[in-house]
Length: 203
Image (cartoon, rainbow, N blue to C red; front, side, top):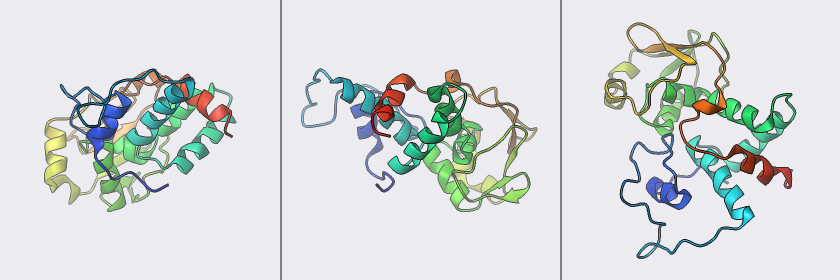
């Protein structure tokens, strides 16, 4: 399945949740389901509830289904609770760290910055969004990236408060990962146990 490039607000309305990594715009007063005149809400099955929680992760972090399944398998092999580890692995993606550090207004824009070579990881160019950062890693924007209008506006008015596990250096164009992220620091509501149950019967 290819990466989603369709209308983002429509996805958030369908999931009933604002996803900061997907869009900087909020749902606002349009809290009805997408569809002509607003589709009538129906009672969701257990499968439907689990699917919604899984889709929140996939769309917020911009992953394909194959990528999310691979991360789930890795999280399942770890000693920590599978759900907690999965969220940690998602938060540690380089494109997400660029977004959470305040360098981009959304995860989508952060991914583009990384792909275009505007980000350095520990002094070296990093153009793979899925790179997993570690404690002590330093993320920095290139001189050229600091003049991009979208980056300038994102730095002036961050979409989200910077989490405690990311420390911004003086000047604001570089940040260091001080510790691993916690599940409570995910910037949108998600029932991670539903995600675990969704994949438990499919992998």
